[in-house]
Length: 139
Length: 403
Image 1 (cartoon, rainbow over the protein chains, first blue to last red):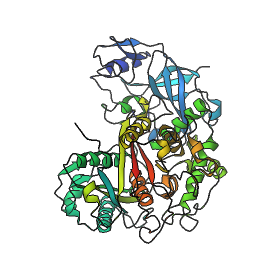
Image 2: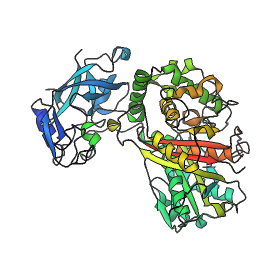
Image 3: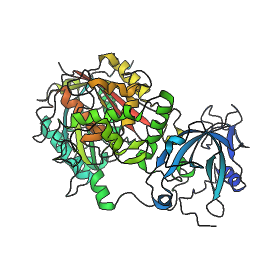
Image 4: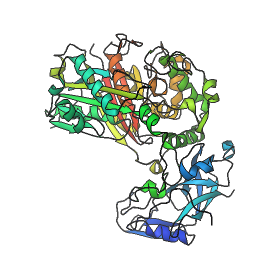
């Protein structure tokens, strides 16, 4: 495996561990409030919509849609090798909006990338315990 | 029963550091702060130690120590470029409640010198502290490159939702440059001040280097060195200075998110809320405003904010700059100093909004700062809106002249 040369998230054991445990198995785990039944993002110790502390983790479909995007022509560290690349925000099917770098798009031709296009999550191994989510355009 | 703070305090003087812009010999944030405070005290005819409240992002305690001020009120609100609009809001509240009678709001930021001395940006191997959400799930791990990486997403979405075009937003940069050509202190005043200075067209903006699609170089503000300060005094005290007061008729602040990954509507900011509060306090509305100082870190920032302030219909923000309306001689002058796009922008631009609004409404724009006069408008009221973070936080002021 090529060494992952980009910033690696340091896992917060108190709030987010279920997400990273799922990522390791290729699952998109999402926090859902038991009280209002809504999925939120990013994971919190209380629901930002109804303030309940009763939160469960569900396995999401791994599907979503592009909300907006921008082409990065400059970056630092390991990301510098990847330019140009497309930073995007994804509306996840179950709820919540996730930041990502898009795969399966032509960064040289941003007009070809469509807001609303369907995307699926995939995970790239960064170190022993950390698998970073990326989203790929599938239609 | 609390009283409405409207008009209970005024900005009584405004000044900049001795030098602004690209200071080739280098400077520091502290130096810029101190020069600006000394200059604003000279303008008002007071000694720094007479100041009772010290307001700045982060540095207030140090500034007070350095200047020998024993403050009764210290505020270090630091939420990006709109911090200074909030400082004015907070000073107004402190004065209205009788805690202090005179305050300084100060800015010093060596955006250009710091970058020149340290190199451009920093390399990071890890994403940073795990308790900051963006370091786990946001731009901390996906290699975003500063503010342009964030603001570009808003323009992409605005074009999608409202059918706007890059040309619409480029026009904001071209009109703002018209104002810069009338301000000899502006970095982009002319070919003499900068190789790329002087008038620009919409086509020039579209032809400039692509930085983060859809933002071109000329959609993006400068990165300069800049210090500035304003003095705020109670209504009673304001009349005792030799300078003209500019009244704080309304003030408001709000936020929609902190990190852009929590931004719900990419084409709207909290300026709708902060301006509603400010207008209500002032008993005025968008139609009563005669000019605007609208934070223009990017063309998209200014365009969207025009909508939020009620100056245009939703989705049509750039139309404020169309047909010469916001240009010199136009009906509604906007960013009369040449803006963050073409005048000066050190990283946090909110102080420059305040200084220019003070100059316009006190009728001192043509007197000049450091011997360099600007363009005077006839405006008697101004809407001033700062935007901080990644379209995150806003502070709005309604200011009125003393005539």
